[in-house]
Amino acid sequence: MSDQMRTQRLLLRPVGPVDAGPITQLVQNPGVYRMLASVAPGQCKAQTLGWIAGHGAAAMSDREHVRAMILDGELVGVIGANRKVAGLPFTIGYWLSPSAWGKGLTTEAAAALLSWLERRGETAFLSGHFADNPASGRVLQKLGFIRAGRSKLFSLGRGEAVDHFDMARIARNA
Image (cartoon, rainbow, N blue to C red; front, side):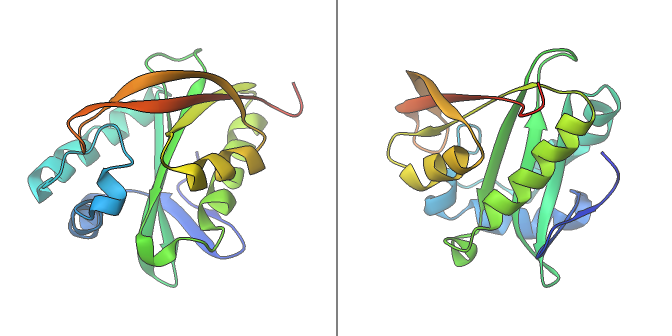
């Protein structure tokens, strides 16, 4: 991904060490971490920095592309595409500050990310949402994802396996 992308309202730029403080503060909100599989309550800045540190190598090997969502100069969320090895479908993941919910920002950011991936030739995408997070499901439906199954997914934020809707999307140009 180029270093930066612009949407109508957002700047999508690589997440860096400067973002560790704002990210840590935002993911400590139960409304955020409870809806994520891999963020524990009480995540500290050092853990956030450790997560950020791996992004460069993962991007170089085309396994991960993570961007900060910047609105009016402020980090309001994170969006990314990741996969275990090149060649597999990317899984799209995101979270947004509660102060920015309900404004269509995640849909806007995800549409830009998916468009970039499709221009590179990617044709299949995965994502999902916890059953008690229908707003995330609506975002994915707007982007053309369809339900592909239901499973239990462990949430570090909740400390237990949670009912999860698995979703998939085939690129429009595939």
